[in-house]
Image (cartoon, rainbow, N blue to C red; front, side):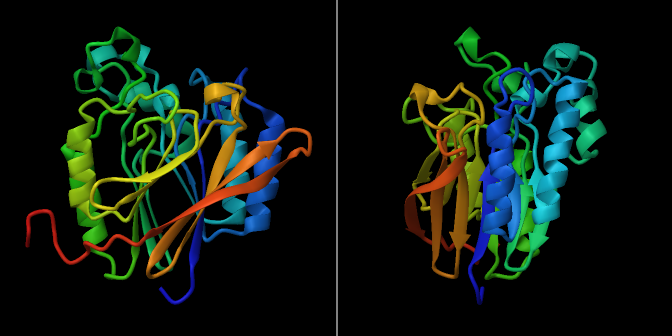
Length: 284
């Protein structure tokens, strides 16, 4: 990677009654000013998976695509789980509206110069794999099937060794600093799968609090906030700018300043670039 690449990362826009349209306009201005190499929208574009909400989300997606190549994955609020709880009539119906507006591929891949961004599906609604003993987790928690990380690994293996490998998913992979909640059921299993798939970076959302950290093997995880008033602890909303070069990954939060009507750059954290490109999960 000869020059640094940048990824603008946002999540949890929740178009509908909770969405802050001033922030949406501010994000469009910010993204244009930053001129990133790519944009990742990590789910929960809607509040209730209604047509009008998806239509407004599509307008936002089109604005992002005019700025840079954009990858979008669904979140739990984008899933019509009530149409088919426990997939009693199959899984297709619960993603019908998302597919209508954002295409059939729920797990898109975006290849840019120096990086491959691979969407993985973590939001399934009310299904056995996402259930926990806490009934409040129903339709909120996600899970990460082995097939998702296996597919990502195969996709990563097809790119040059120096490429940045990025997973884009909705549910937060690290425990929330304020909520103390994990976004995934069976999160330890998910950690191992993500580590083994060879990702350098994971972009996610869901917890409504910006955060940055690493998995035990050094894989960087960046969580974006929400663009509603429903932030953790009454914090300012935040989105992220990720800058990556051959040796490091930097995550900088951009927080909403309501008085100024704009996002401002806040703290940045820099991590060494994790390197485990040379092996396939099978060890081959």
